Amino acid sequence: MVYTLLEHLSNELLISVFEYLDAVHLYHAFSDLNTRFNQILNDSLIRLYFDSNNVRDYRDHYIFNRINRHQIITLTITSGRFLAYLKFYISTFINLQSIIFNSTNHSQDFLSELEPLGKLRTLVVRNTLNECEFVRRIVFENELPQLRKFIYIPKVQHHYVEHVGLNDTTRNASNNLEYMKIQNVHSSNLAVFLRKSSNLKYLNVSITDTLETGVLSSKLIYLNINLFRTTYDNLYQLLHLSSLLNLKKFELSGYGYDQKLLNGEKLRYLVSSVPSLRIFNVNMKINTTPSFEIKVATFENEKIYWKNLKWYVEGMYATLRAELF
Image (cartoon, rainbow, N blue to C red; front, top):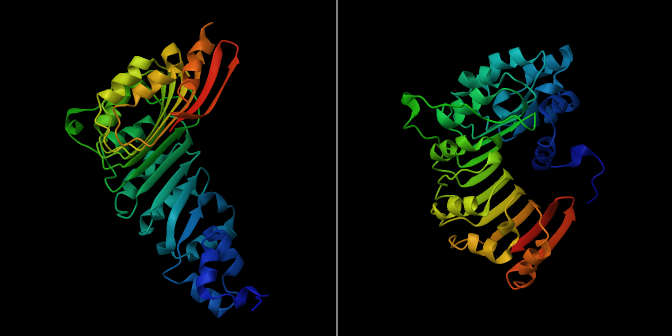
């Protein structure tokens, strides 16, 4: 059978289509068209996402008040006039699973309103400034214990999380995060992040200065580290002091000043203490010396271990990309 009209689709297919649309756009397009569409829009099975940036005028505001907030599972909050109004109602999104704060510096204002949302699992804060206190309250004080995934991406590249202290009342607290991605972290805070996140399975972190040794979670399955500058010995201590029995994938990127990072044999030895590792990807810019080609040749001599080897020189830096079998 050839379907020529949207109405010919089954309710299940229509729900699948509707779930790709923002809730405001969806209600603008289909609300009150006919009885069937209204029934689908009120179906308890439908799961919608809502972006506050799409509320631009009084008509959008009227539509928002008609939306069944129990259907919203993903919410994006962007700076704008609607922000204060949304804060008043956010606790009514009882099935909310993920929330994204985008380009707003008012994330902290919502924290107390999010506490009753027991199904909330993912929190993303991106393109923001001066939200270090927010990070501290989430990671160090565990103010949202229902969270399992936390992503923090500040707007300014060289802004980093620093001077985030712990007081005596939170010293023994630990969060429940299993996935954490944080950019531009000061290395002096990394050990604290790791200590407060003992349940981590996925860690993606970029560090703004020289790597300091810390102990990684033994539950880690995936590890991605982007470094501003580091040495082979720093990495060796980080990996060998941690009991990474479950780590399956390790991705290393950033800038290095240690010629050992150009040595395929040493890099292979670097991860030798990780018994379950299946994928080790290297994508580094490394300060070069005249012996650069000799160092890189160690990868060629180990072709049974390395694949997709690529390297080129730009000024004083060599870019090295390689994957360990």
